[in-house]
Length: 179
Image (cartoon, rainbow, N blue to C red; front, side, top):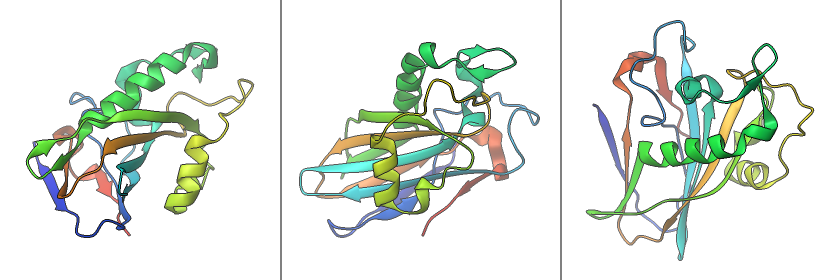
């Protein structure tokens, strides 16, 4: 499985990243996900912790069998435990280390976002959106449209290393978006 390793220099560094792996099943077929997949995120080291914000297309969570109602809309009342599991899977997809020591992630917040949501244009907007109110239960979101957003919190690290494990089944269809 390919691996990307990034070393971060500077405590105030905010780096845009895109990633996914463990949250992605290795058996995805060509019709399960779009031709191009972009996973977006931010890493923000601070003195007491490191925040990671991720946005994953819902199509990547196909094997989680999110609860549905009607013709395939997300079933809001039954969704929260699945969002927590998706957050844990996203945390497994990346590994933050302090040098060689792996850091444990805490899932601080999750949410579903509409396809039209533009909160991930910058760290502050993404953080506010993830920590803000959830979509109303009356909102109809099809199970493979829109986004899954997660806020992961790691302990602070003196020598921050980010390892991203990419799903080989996606080949060239998964793109890292960095700014």
